[in-house]
Image 1 (tube, rainbow, N blue to C red):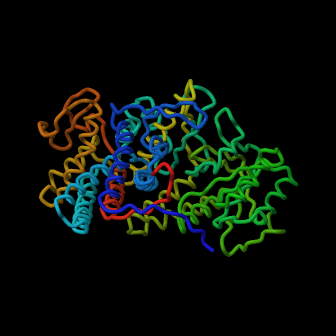
Image 2 (image 1 turned 180 degrees about the horizontal axis):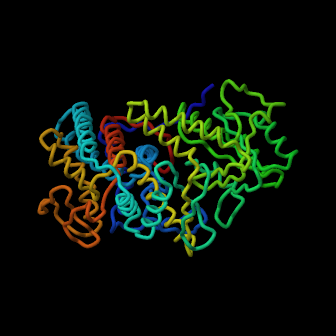
Length: 521
């Protein structure tokens, strides 16, 4: 029988006011990092230590509000920004800035007596017009623009921009780029032959190389690749026993329930087993393709629904191997065994190239190129170093943002940065856009200027013609492309899509049900 839990119900203007207050608290904190002259946020961790960051994503993840209604708004913003990051690799702060502005202006229209349904529909129509405009405005990426995207995303850090650009150019069209902690205070680039998985360890407890905080397996580890979620310990037991009996390292690339993963963590901590778990990225067919491609590299078979639930006596069928596997917080590198059959991988690459050649679907062609890139075996690894732990964390954030932004830009091109592209969309489409959206999409441009203390009153400011904008580093009106200030088109589009989603959710909300907490009384 379901346990009765007392809930609070908050309705009407009170509910909406608290949600908007939560949005403002979160957005004002996160948006302070926006742009070249954005500020650092100092965060205290659970152990009382501090670390500074200018990365909006990390700032957002650390926020939990005491008031339950305000915290619901915080969670909505987290979900919206996470979707932007998942689809485009960057854009947390832009998503938050747009969300706050859309919520502010749509609520003003609501107060004027307009229907919430009409406001929502008008915002969605305007969103679609802007997305189409940005697609047409976008410019394909070049080697120089790779550097510019990295520079913009790394908040003007030229050292990071240089090394990220070199990493992508060195890897080539079919190569991959990842990043790991360095075991020194230096940041440098390595190029290796291997396969990169854009996912790291499922739990920090699997770390065994503490100097660079990786889970490192250098002695021909066994590899299990599973498309099914391991729900019971009995499912993984045959693999664990095989590895223990043969004194082999073991890596799982699979979803698994907490209690199953916990058993592996306990075995690792006790020294009974050298093991780690990597959670595969993607969903459904995309994840299946990724795992089946990786199975070719590891010389094994992917576990799927047709493999059954029991692997007793069959463990060897699904155990592959590599020369080494190195697992970081967000990337994993598989180095193939020296005696692996490379012809199988080459055959698959040729097969995929044929599919790409015959395809007329742009999205399918991009997806096939991603698979070819993973299989091609050239990986540029950025080893990120820092003198102090705080400096290292902050630098890793910047490298991660830059790498993700370049990956995104390689897919859909770039537009002028600094909020200029959305400003241009507002001027070009002004008569077709609803008032809420038209005002909201100017917010990234003016927030960047505000963080630089460049302007006090937006109404007194004449916006330059595209692609001109304001370089807040030197306080000059410039051509943004010539100055190298550009944004990934995919990032800006996804930031807008997800900002509209969260804004419309709050716009359409009239009642909020929350758990009863003493602190809410």
